[in-house]
Length: 224
Image (cartoon, helix red, strand yellow):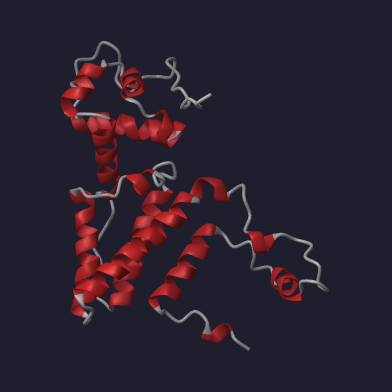
């Protein structure tokens, strides 16, 4: 039997006060859609569920968004549009780290949204500013357009890959963090686990890996 998406309770308080004459403008609709995603998960977001949540009808929603895919694309762009890109010029590593961290922190605030980016790459104006700054920093520092594009794609996938784990990471520890490793059979693992560094919080692991990818020194002062 095909699993059904979780239902949004019809008894949950509607965002719009029943009987009010406030029109369902796009921003109001997107707020409701994001609320469903944050609370119930992306699978619960359907046009019918959203209409119930807004105390409206689906016909009204379709006047603004052609289908669920268009609605999801707009929600993603709206969230990415909240990112603060006001960062002074610096090295390409500093700019790339700042923008990548900003994207991760934004997705961390909406962990149910991150999986949607896998099948819905952001292409709206909300994502264009960050991408432009990222690529401009690389080109300014001598990267070829091809190399800049490859690095941008790599970093975008790195951020999304970590962000997708946000929902489950609180319940699933890092594999290397499993206690009780046999020091005879697995001495390196046991010694590493005993150091207390694992399991590493996901946000810390993300930043650590970000520095490694960008060549920011994180290892020299940790070697014996």
